[in-house]
Length: 436
Image (cartoon, rainbow, N blue to C red; front, top):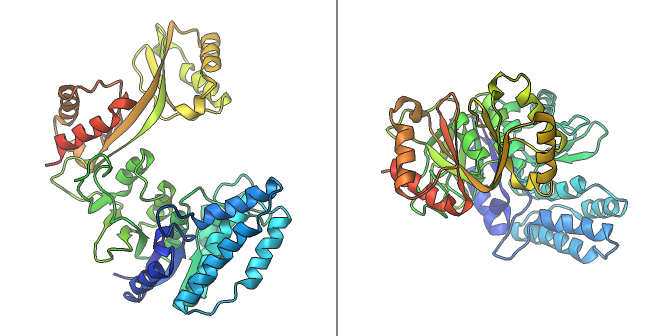
């Protein structure tokens, strides 16, 4: 199929057994030339991820507590992996450097990044691939935003020098040379950046699930797998809570039109889910269902609102001043609802309402708490008459009250708001209505 970049998550790299599976996957296809790795994940229920242990070391130092015992646990884990794999890699100088930087007050980003760094050193030795550090190659600006084109140029230039390489995920460098990490799951982004830089034919993302399912299996145990999904559909599902792939990992691959293949390290024969630029024709009306709980809705009514210039801008400015992000804005002629994450407005609701009353003088303001959002997503929805009617009828017959409706002009998704208590029931009803 051509050149492949493969990213392996923490569950795929947790111990020697998982690493042996990973090596077998890589060596089974000589086109898997560039490997991006996360830090080791949990080996068993109750285990602690290496990244969390590193954060714990930092917390101990900041609180003047001894950290050496926790740090030794980390060192022993990597040494045990190297011994079990039969590889020779001298990590002692690396441990000492990290220990010194800890004592000198190194940032949390630096400390957290060392999990990926050390793991990449071990795995490069295990595979007999080159080790390429992403420090100085993945670049951020002074505000911490990814410099995507500069990063692409730096990675492309460096990786041309390496036939096969292992790179640590999750981090890059600020203009002052300090380490900057992505958010949790950010190794997915590193993999996508590497895939674009080497013009890969496929970006494989190996994890502990065989791709995406049409609904959360904790709610719909028999949820069907999604064999193919478009970037746009995945973006909608990821934003609404489907968490197999970091949502920001889609963009770099999409820029270069590189398909993303979600695969299962433990069941490598499964083809998983292929993410492509264009939707594949299917008899299925919807592609998937995803949702999240714990939103609040600020509902505003003002007579002649539609003719009042700047009303929405003023409202958004108020919310920006309170550092509140907007999720959705369903609206009518004289009414407007703003959906916000509950945690963003915690302790601020009364002040926000007072400010809205003072600056916008609405007739009424209502706050609806504990709302769950559910997105029903699929390219097939726009060409099928009666899709919305089918969804709303099924929910009504199932006894679920819809608090909010929002549909984009593309007709690729329908977002509804229901009470938190009805969330699981609503997802189940929608799945049963559309999936045979």
